[in-house]
Length: 262
Image (cartoon, rainbow, N blue to C red; front, side, top):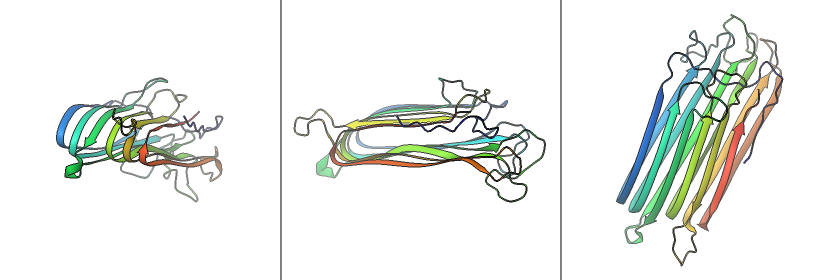
């Protein structure tokens, strides 16, 4: 596990968006066995503000406003092979607490290509949490936190993204994602975690190694600014990029994660 922590003590520290009256939820469950071709496409973009006066279609932030944009993407194509696929997905817009999640996704995938037909599985999964917000309480409308010059907002802004890619002819894989970004308690950390574990099926010749290629990645970029509402001082800055790749015959397990601290 790789943990990245925003230092506490700033009025402008990263904090979650709190749920409003619209606490919508999404769930998806898939359990499929396919001899042939299986296609799964999933794209989600979930915007949230902590104030009824906020407008997600505008770059202007209200006083003390926090916005979160959560995206999830999966594109799976398992062609000309035997596939055993399960997926459990949930997105909950109500206030989370420490130990609970707003975003949860889990896959188990077994795939074996029909090599005489050129079988292949392509898998692409990614989750991203983007946040920006005001660092001080006031009633003045200000520019987005990324704006500069006079009228620029003190606060915080940035994103964390994690996921995996596979291009394989044989694999037994488990992936799991968890994210927390909506909470009534400003001291509940914003969190994104991703776990990947892939090996081969139980075949003697390949010694339980997957065939093909896989990568696991995380990108994190966050900044916090000074306490003054018009300050352009950067007080904390994190820029972290990770990418692990395996090609050929492989067994790959990796867990990455981001956690903010108020």
